Length: 133
Image (tube, rainbow, N blue to C red; front, side):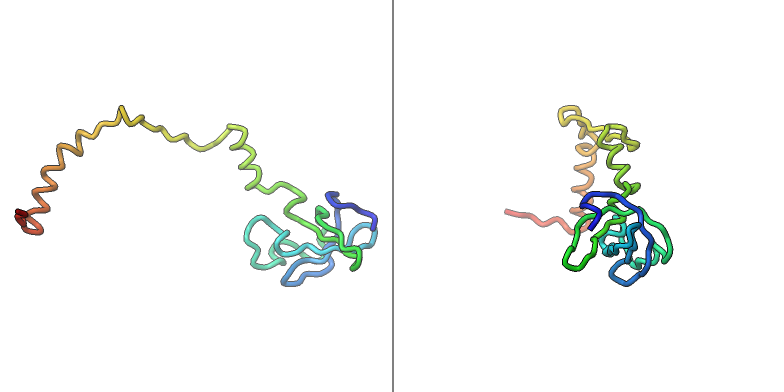
């Protein structure tokens, strides 16, 4: 087996099954991209992501020497948009608005206090006032 784990190489899609895609590598050896390694998004059908005859860039994630087969990953070969967003956020360049939090000492509950007696009176009228002795 010519390649090693972690290498990123190109290959041609030679077959598609419900569980993954078979890849012919440049040196003639075979590999399999399992459906879980096609994309970081939900994959309902492998054929939605790759086509027979398509050249793809893949990463070798395991070598099954007894079967003379490489386990490959399409999603690990190149960063996906979701991974890029995480990298941007981790660098502090977040495109999202930061939430503004008011410290508890500065919070004003006056509108609630002013309305509380009215709410109690309305509830008493609605449910009937019961005296508790």
